[in-house]
Image (tube, one colour):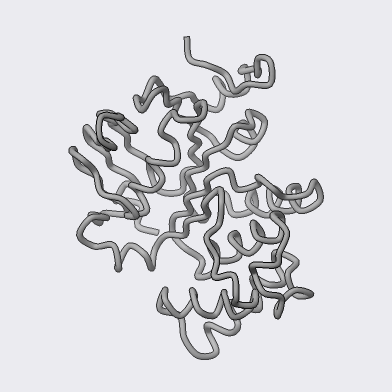
Length: 238
């Protein structure tokens, strides 16, 4: 981890889909080792911002650097440094769980015994050893999310992008994942999007509040500790 280079440096970052302004002039700096949250209602721009950071879509305007790299020009190099766990994982339905991890691990540059050891470690870490040959298309939602988590952490990335990472997990695996992630705090950086205020409070030290694509404020851990959900909705910026 290069502590002299910000994990994220966004300047007037915008992304439009036709007339819809998904992300509008976001200015954001996230330092190495950060546990950073994204808060906001559905359609606030959280997932779009994560996809921009991952290099899956290009900005409409503005500037973005991720780990010192430009995602629009250095996506391959960046792909070896980040892990992305989407809310709804896109998996090859015909591939078994282990084959899925081997395929994507190879695409990220792992090979040989290193690849096999990494895959076996993640299968054990996310309690998937009983499902190694099961086609991913036949998995339950919770199992699919555990496969997505295993893929995201496969090569010990410098930066993790977590979009509703516990959505679909049963309570036992949810608590196991949260406990494990907390042990990695300070050793890796992550940006976590969640509708769950308690999850934001426990897993992040700062959190940005997005509303209709705009950054409305950044809350510290002290601010977050005093927030309370209203009618089961995440806190809304005044």
